[in-house]
Amino acid sequence: MGYHNIGCRCLEYLIEQKENVVAVFTHKDNPDENLFFDSMANVAESGGIRCYTPENINSPEWVSLVKELAPDIIFSFYYRNMIPSEILSIPRLGAINLHGSLLPKYRGRCPVNWALVNGEEETGVTLHYMVDKPDAGDIVAQGKIPILFTDTAYTLHEKMVKEAVVVLGKAWGLIKDGRNERIPQDLSVGSYYGGRKPDDGRIDWKCGSLEIYNLVRAVTHPWPGAFCTFRNQKISIWECEPVPVKRDFEPGSLVSFDRAGIVVAAGDGALLIKRCQINGDEELDGYEYATMYSLHDGEIFT
Image 1 (cartoon, rainbow, N blue to C red):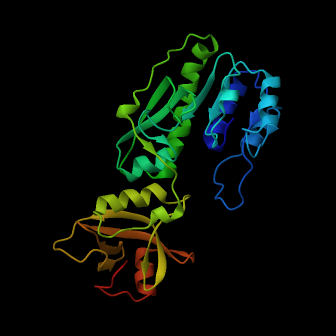
Image 2 (spheres, rainbow, N blue to C red; image 1 turned 180 degrees about the vertical axis):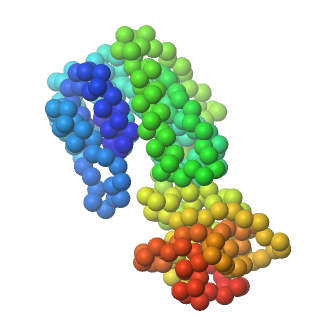
Image 3 (cartoon, one colour; image 1 turned 60 degrees about the vertical axis):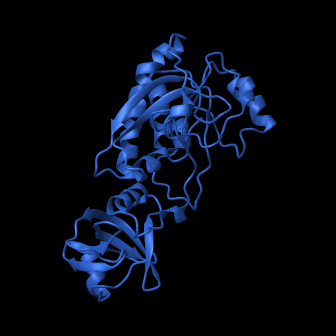
């Protein structure tokens, strides 16, 4: 069961190992979503594997099908829905999920984006047994990933795709033989985060420049982006960096601009806006935007 590039690469690993993957369960692509990732259904088809796209894996017909398939193990590689206990109890070797964080930290949704929003310097991937509570089962294996200051959600996700296959490769032989470790999670020292909506990308210029920078890189392309309002128009900020300023300015005020971009004051310091977009129009670099729209110092981004 899986989706996204992590699902595709992990499935490809199992196919390369000539494992008997009896079926793949994935999601139908949403035409309203930015589909920047590969299709797990296509990977299954190329491997000659039966593929299903249930709307609700919890419904009786799908539970019955999994029982008929009688798998020794179920893997969940970025599958988006909770899998019911009726299904989790079927495989003799258990049901194992791959999660995009170092559990028990960042249980729940969007761990890559949340780690960047919060300015983390390290994250990783975790293989763990699935239980009724999300991302709470015993840990099988983990791999750590450093987060660079220049990382975005996309570059960090690409690192996770590679690390996911590495961790799966190291653990798979032990899992298959039933000899893997089971390390209980201490949820009291962990954290849980919910899903993110496009509106969560709204910029509050009263926040510090580093906090705003982290938000921008957490939701920049191919995610919906961070945004604010200027001259009653929505402006999406796709690339920026924190910069110092020599004196205090009102948060959101335009400090200056040059060929490097637009400098906008934050709660402390400022942001150099390098790339932006007005109301979904053509994307511009900061200087192009400033000259095209005749910006002047002191104007306010809200």
